[in-house]
Image 1 (spheres, rainbow, N blue to C red):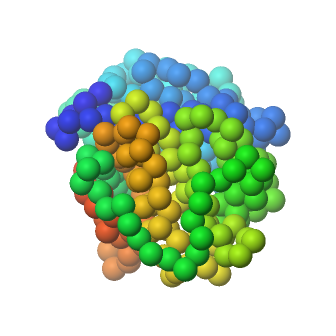
Image 2 (cartoon, one colour; image 1 turned 45 degrees about the horizontal axis):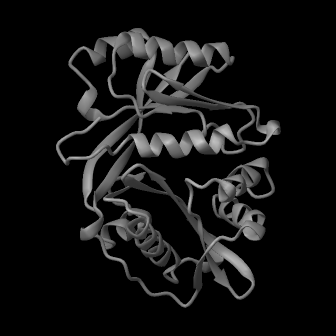
Image 3 (cartoon, rainbow, N blue to C red; image 1 turned 45 degrees about the vertical axis):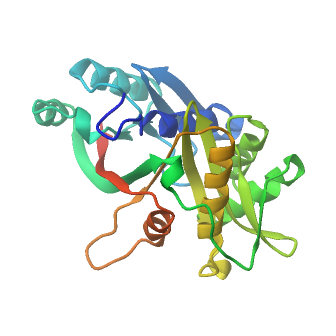
Length: 265
């Protein structure tokens, strides 16, 4: 799926979700399937309250595709899920299709991305930034999940499993011997997808995420990516999202806003 900006800004995000969930520990009771050209994932025992249950990356949105997605979730006994659908694929008939299926608008996200040669590859921090080595995988996974507020769960191991996956290129920020922030890069064809960026509350404001973004952008260029993408939340009026600000400072322009659509049984 290629749209006006000239590259596919959805499939790489879908791929990193698939790769994470497909290698989840058994205790999460997770499933990841490729369906109708996209990816559908479900984590029954999700400590994040449903974040890891979503469908995304579809090249078209039709009644048949929606029914396939919902059918998968019903087969898993799920009562709700998020559908992340590119706004460029939503026809006038989508309103009727979603209303008939109990699909309602949820939070708004923003997709960013652009050519690798137009991003900024430098940022400063007093923390040490380095790729995650295999023996550091557990520390890194736990640090990221601690930053997201769910330490000590099987999600830490799910993230740690990505360190051994050649499609992923994780980075960590260190304060001495302690991992205090992390971020991941998935290379999918010519597109690099930035994800999993999080900093522990005691180390925010020290440039960790800007430096981690820059490190992953450099890695994406070295690995032959022509494009890079990222996604984060769109701030509510009167608020700000530091993640969005960091990505824009790194030279990633906003491509479009995207609504999360929530299916509820």
